[in-house]
Image 1 (spheres, rainbow, N blue to C red):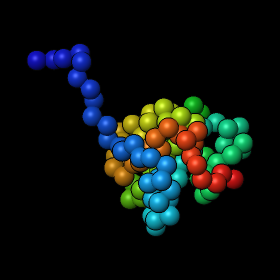
Image 2: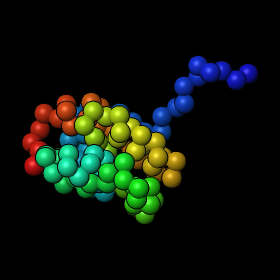
Image 3: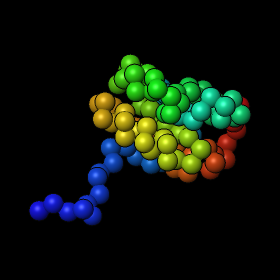
Length: 111
């Protein structure tokens, strides 16, 4: 029976800032900032690559990324990065971590 109240299972993991930070120091890890370029230039997590989820080329940019890496994805609050993780999961990525609360909850250095 179909239920309107059933939730779709997430294919990514929400992680707190300390775990996200620890993962960022591991090999084969890519940090993706999915905010706008203006937000990105105002302060980012060290080593992050900017792929604006609202840009028309986002889907194609993500589709061309290697699938064997672990992707640490963040935005300002965690909403856009969750959507980006959904898109990436739909493209076959399976090592996806979303920064819980986004960069707004990041207690570490930004550059």
